[in-house]
Length: 376
Image 1: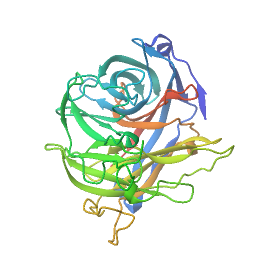
Image 2: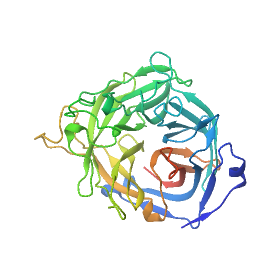
Image 3: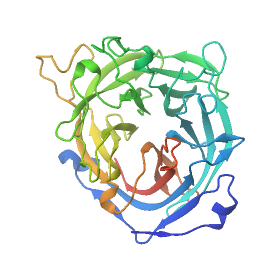
Image 4: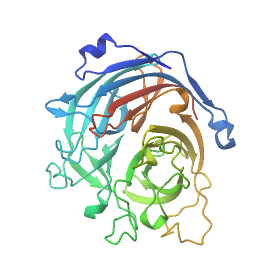
């Protein structure tokens, strides 16, 4: 259960939002994910903050937030918008989020940074689809899903704090879209996830299967997404792993139409364990969001396997265990797409999520905070 609480801070925020706090402390503990008791994790729900669709900042509609990261040096956050340079040039925001173990009382936009292409210009309309963002030692790391319909490949790039282009990572073979859809990314189902391992390696994940790796998830079957491990120093791939996306967990409860389930973000816990968000929606039921822990130890390096669907080789995917179902603890998640560990203003360790509102009047930019009681 969630009770309504409108904070004074929210009333004076640059972004007019609404804060919600937990009626009772809801704690979710998984003592031994995939039988590994050293991987125990425990999360306690803290609160929610909502920014209505249509909210403006500097004359630009705020929304489409699909990636979030925390900067411990400034105690600020960076958040990427998945606006394809349609409402305004592709961009990321610097945010101040007043979050504690008691909830989120305010969210402020401090500045907007426009991404620049290789020519130093803002991206043209529909020339990019920003999705994930992380703060690295040498700049801002971010991904674009590309556009399979336009045969635009996905990418991972590094920019300066001012959005200027610095470098681009090498795209592994088989990821570029093809006109006959025989191989490559599917439209809007590509590079949704970024996270750094403690070693500095970068993890990049697709939302769902590549064309050659089998179908996307439906109500009775899952899907095989790919995880790329990059050497951050040279931008070259080191390994790939298979991730089993779950079938769509809820059938439509009213009407018919589009429904889905896919990976929207990953967040490293240590050198081989990560948290993964799977989220989607079904008509009538609404949105759902589940968080899993995965472990790449023992998983097959599939980088040399051109097609997971047709390969006759034995493949071991990453191990996976559910650690949180947001609907099951009484929350009503929107389109959850971003996730970061953070330090609260009270010193507490937090896990903060954000939802992409798709700039839709029927959705909202939603921040959810959990206190981290235990983690690997």
